[in-house]
Image (cartoon, rainbow, N blue to C red; front, side, top):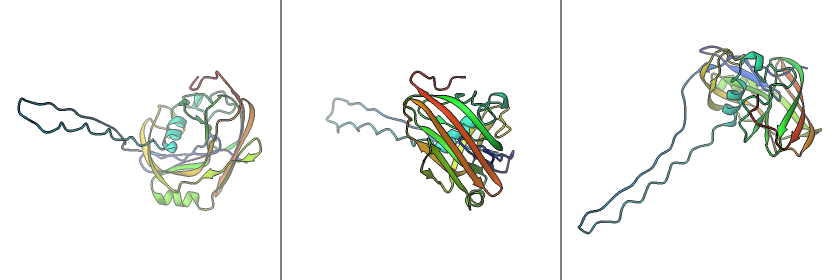
Amino acid sequence: MRATLFKISKNRGSVRAAGPLTFLPMLRPAAALLLCGLFLAGCDDKPTASPTPPAAPASVAPRPIQARWWEWAAAEPEATNPVADRTGRQCARNQPGDVWFLAGTFGGEVRRQCTVPLGVPLVAPALNLVGETRQDCSAFMTGATGSVQVDGREVRLDRPGHEAITFTAGPGNPVTRSAGETSGMGCGLWARIDPPAAGEHLVTIHGRSGTFEVYVQYQLVVKAGASPGAA
């Protein structure tokens, strides 16, 4: 069995990934998203109308979890990249704090050990891809299968058909192979896992699309005081 893969091409192409770490080859540069704002008024000595009430601040849409995961996966150069990591030593790199990402591999089977802070949910792709078009996602997801288990219990997988995402990759990363903004259509099989109880847990990730297959095991130690984002 194999682990996660990414597919990334410089200006046109796609990126794929899978496993507790999900990775794929190739992505492409692109545009951005979101913002927000506000207002105030006054009077003179004549009777005046009531001041215009302040405009309600625009709500900010939550950033897609796929975009956040890809940005995390593509942040580090190969030597410290959690997707290229064979042991779990790099699993805490750049973790955002409100969620803990798990990764697949660029191919092959891998087993990792990782310490995770108590009270934080986990997100893991069994398979994932960033493609240039909806058709890339459609072809990748046709016949795609996957599973994520926590201590032998199956986790329900989300299956977004395609979603426009934008993220920023770091220099020297092995995921996109180039730094800067990347955009495309994201899709895959995604597990969202409630915060595990303190103690040891085994997370197993397996996914397949066509000839691509990933298999990853994470031996997790969940404890209070573990630092998200530690190097």
